[in-house]
Image 1 (cartoon, rainbow, N blue to C red):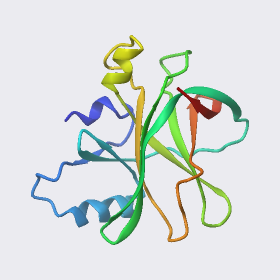
Image 2 (cartoon, rainbow, N blue to C red):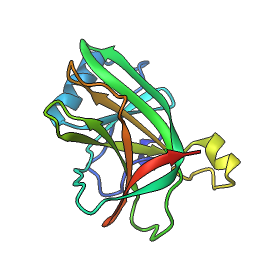
Image 3 (tube, rainbow, N blue to C red):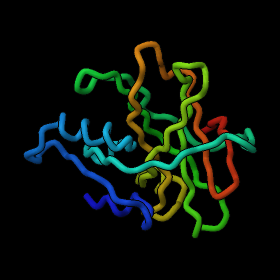
Image 4 (cartoon, rainbow, N blue to C red):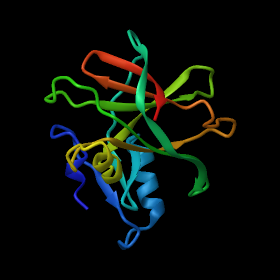
Length: 171
């Protein structure tokens, strides 16, 4: 497990929990909640990372080649959590600017909730589309939910610099 592959070089860092460690899962959950970090699952391990905020100003709606493969609600340490994983083909453009993927969920107050997902390689997608194996075509997020929240109206947003695309997923 090399979390540095998935994180920005200038990020504060990440925290990896693979379940085999001598760490109580509640400690991981409490750390993430205290820091208000985002969480993802990669190769069966949880990675916590400091996500970036998203503002939808100037976002354009467009078709994006991709899919949400996993959309399930589970319970972790007594809290409802949405596990969302999928893939979306990265956009062309300046590769020095990292493309981010955000997940938009209906918020409990009527306003959308935006959570940054962790970009990950997806071997089967990269192979099928003849992209380099290290291409970050996948995304993963674990999102804490309020009791009344669900994941039926999930939207994926790609963001690179000032370019923001609200994706209508096709595959």
